Image: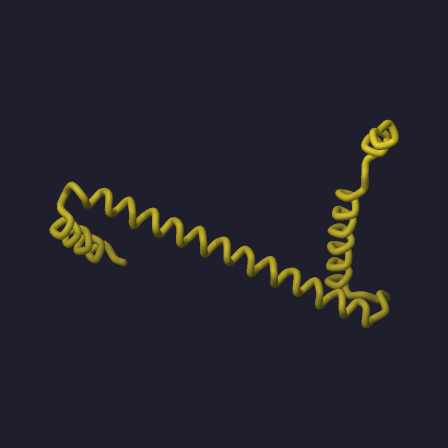
Length: 106
């Protein structure tokens, strides 16, 4: 919207709502816009993550078709990223030596 359009909207709002209710209405509308924008950003982040996972899956299929040998740099990066993710998941589920010791003591 241009400046003159905003002025017209402000004047119409002032006439319709009055000077007492206009600030409340502006805050409410601003809050709605903020909520919608946050929702849109969340959806965009989720879609981007799904696209990245899909790309990694496709690259893994290509690497398996090539027998995991003579891979392009892009495929090798995807495999490295998948290996790191798998290792981080594996490490988070491995019991620590102190927790194993605690179980033995019980």
